[in-house]
Amino acid sequence: AQEGKLIEVRSANLLNVRTISDQEVRELIGNVHLVQIEPGEIIRIWCDSARQFVATNKVELFGHVRITRDGVTVTAPEGVYFGDERRAAFTKSVRLEKGAMTLTSAFGEYFADEKKAIFVHDVTVVDSVSSTKSNALTYFDTEEKSIAVGDVSVTSSENNVTVYGDSLVHFAKRAYTIVPKNPRLVQIDTSEGGIIDTLVVMADVMEAYRDTVHRFVAKGNVAMARNDFVARCGEAVYLMKRERIGLRDQPVVWHRENQVTGDSIAVTLFEKRLRSIYVKGRAMAVSRSDSLFRNRFDQLTGRELTMYFAGNKLERVEAERNAVSLYYLFEDQTPNGMNRSSGDRIAIEFQEGKAGRIKVVGGVEGRFFPEPMIAKRESHYNLDGFRWIEARPKRSNLHVIREAHD
Image 1 (cartoon, one colour):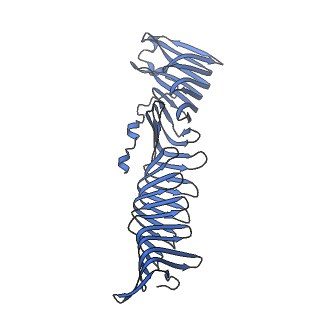
Image 2 (spheres, one colour; image 1 turned 60 degrees about the horizontal axis):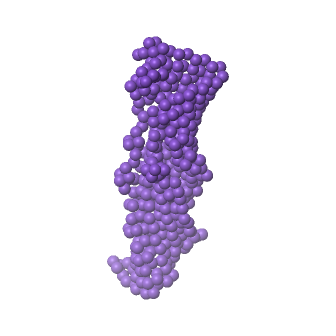
Image 3 (cartoon, helix red, strand yellow; image 1 turned 180 degrees about the horizontal axis):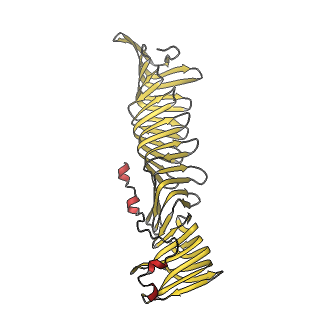
């Protein structure tokens, strides 16, 4: 054994000394207490019985094994402690505790010098706000950093949010987590009618900041869906406690038959139900005017646009600054021309999803296009920036099947 790394026996009810393969072996039975003293710290070991190999400075530990060092406690039914390496290995039901954090797994190793632990198979980490599961996990004590790999899931009991991924890195001191590959966020909620309503978010990378607003940041090929709300963009920020979702980098939002685009989009919820959608920069709202006339789209543009909802239904849309509207007219389901209006501000009220009263304020201009002029030429009259995106994300494709991660 290396000098200064000897394992000392502090207590045992019974001591037997034997020679096995020319090596002195001490058998310790009953209330075993061992220590290894290093400059500045002491590793303490307790167990029911132990077998100490003096020459190799190794101890086999049996029954109610407990090892403590600097606020970290590791327990298991049995294990082996290697004194020269200051390493403990466990092959059954290992448990590590530090403060409010508890980590359990089938197998584990603890490295005292590196202040590192490696856990494999059925790994679970529970702290005051979340539970993490994975196939394997490496924990760095000094940094309070965890790296989990293999069918990873993190569940927050406070807000019913679970994030899945191939792997994650968690920094406890910074309250920051990153899922760098195949992340999925799932938030399960129950609507007023008792129906399960689930928010699903997918992206290339996902980050979580456990700050005052509980921020989730999704980056790269972001797609999300909840009830009648669907969106995609390059980057999304979900402020959970403020019930606000910010979308940027070519964002698109769909709500039922309505499509919204712009430079940036802010979605506001109230009690987890859609309250408003605010669009800034090249804002445009589009909806199919009639299912029988698939080339006719009602359109509204402006530098800013806000959609207001009640009971998950669209009530009003307001466009401001260079506002322009284009709406098709029907009489008893028979097409009857089109109106185009512009002004400083345009407000449109909706009833049962259909546009009703339209109010134009400031610098008002309007023109009616009779049916013979626009028939089969609808695309020529679309507003600047018009695009109708058929390939909207489907929640069935985003939804995570839990069994795939169990």
